[in-house]
Amino acid sequence: MTKAGAQAWAAQEGIALVFPDTSPRGADVADDAAYDLGQGAGFYVNATQQPWDAHFHMWDYIAEELPAVLGRAFAVDLERQSITGHSMGGHGALTLAMGRPGQYRSVSAFSPICNPIGSDWGQKQFTSYLGVDQNLWQPHDASHQMLDVGFDGPVLIDTGTQDQFLELLKPETLAFAMAKRRQDGHFRMQKGYDHSYFFVSSFMEDHVAFHAEALYAE
Image 1 (cartoon, rainbow, N blue to C red):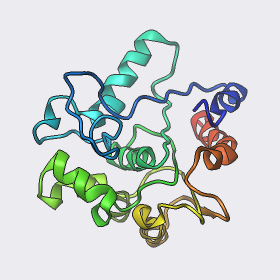
Image 2: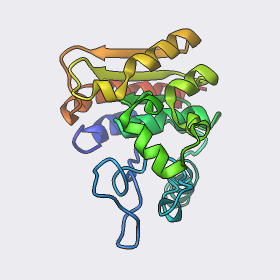
Image 3: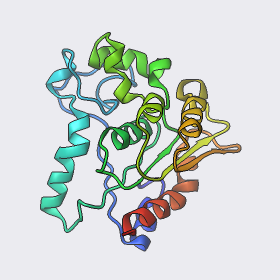
């Protein structure tokens, strides 16, 4: 949020932004040496496998626990929520939006992991957090969810054509699913951009304005 300057655009639109951590933290919380598993990479699921199941309930945290805390502490309207994210956070935003119908008015993502079931950014993590039954993985795969249920609202996705992780993100699977469903929204491949926060900052104004329009709509 800070690197992308999102707070300036949010202030202009009169909306609140909350960007939570990606996973539990602490000495007593399970971790892994790999950057894409454990603390710093919770993948927005409720883990069922040891040792992750003790603390890694990020789906419930994002969808239920954190909004409840915000509602008690700040003058925010919990009837008007939207969700966004970058990379793994984009995966989480999309799956939460489709998996929690009626909670979010709009969803957007920067460089999201689109098909984790078919990617090394997903298979290892889902096996660790959820076990080997791939039927349990599908609610956390945006491409599968788009084909199965879609999203009852607008979608905005931006991915760079020079993203160094395109083979892991698999944007073509979600683009195909959105087209097949005729999903309300836009899937944009931005020429020359990579996976960095410079890319996110370049299009953050668009995303804030996109969500503001949905949030203020009656």
